[in-house]
Image (cartoon, rainbow, N blue to C red; front, side, top):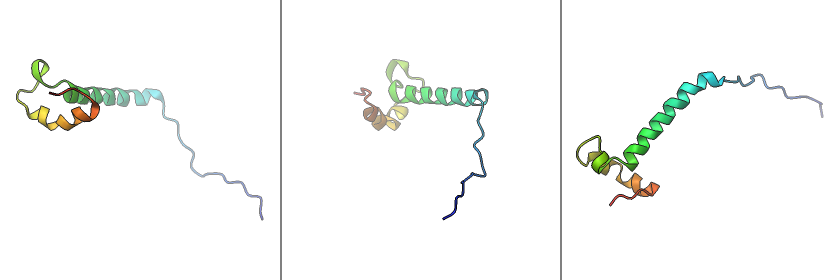
Length: 69
């Protein structure tokens, strides 16, 4: 039996928060937009006329517990 120490050749590089912040904000805005379309895109708050968006996200509403009808 030999006494060897495992040294990985590749070390992870830390990513500064300053570089991640724009992506975090972008992802948050996309998630808020998705939440709007799933949860509130109908009736008086509708941005897109008709029932197309409502029918497209209908099952998502029920899965997430949003009242629909």
